[in-house]
Length: 318
Ligand code: AVI
Image (tube, rainbow, N blue to C red; front, side, top):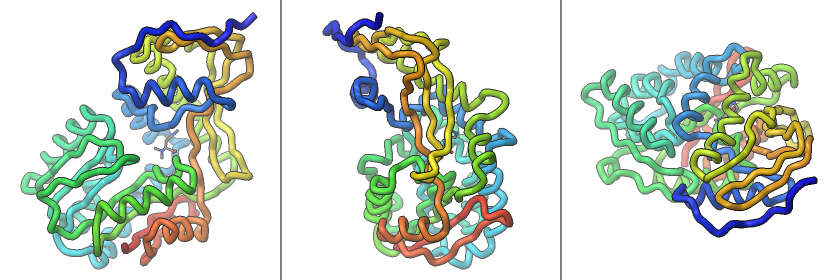
């Protein structure tokens, strides 16, 4: 018999937005928690491990593309532009862009502060003369750019198909906001993942080594750590599926048995087979990608894909 969902009245000291999203998400039907909360320190490290997996084609495909388009990109970018990277993570692809366009400054923006500072520090060592201004921020809210880059031409860099983790209407809102933050005359280089055979897609989000499973399950561990959670993590399993109607991979955490647990003093009960929806990763065809960008106020001016047409890099102007 599952217990009713109740509250005990004591609050945790965690990020109030995390608390609200988790409590609301667990109470909703279907249950869903926004994917942005994957990225605590451990989650960011696990994501980096995902990018090295043989099944996870996006990172290596996009990196190879970036290397290939460098000279062309240089011809299409303003000289000495400030590169503003949204969700910079490990900044692994950034050196390719900074070198290609001979950047005048680098502004990495990331929600995971210590990871951001470490990556920015490491990158600075490879670019001794380059001013680097890290901004610890959730770019889903307004991001003030550092005043030092105010008068420089800007190249927004939004790689990795992170845009795919948003629903279309949120993606359009974000693209519009980026246009405003980057200002007049800015350009945006964005990576977008393509629709492709289902087996390839599902394998990329359900790898043989269980790294993606650990990444998904870490959300429950984070809830336990930061929100006084008592979730029995071993009662959940990672599940990735292709939703053809919505053209997206969905990730879920599925209860393997009936479970009761508390989060921040509030009780929850889930029946075996019930899931918490934790991520959408939308994939776009060429037309859908361009339509989305135009809806966000950006005009595509150049587009590159790999020989299999698995991943696209699109350069847009404001
Ligand atoms: C960050 N984002 C673009 C990744 C993706 O492919 O949607 C997150 C991820 N989730 C599972 N694997 C990777």
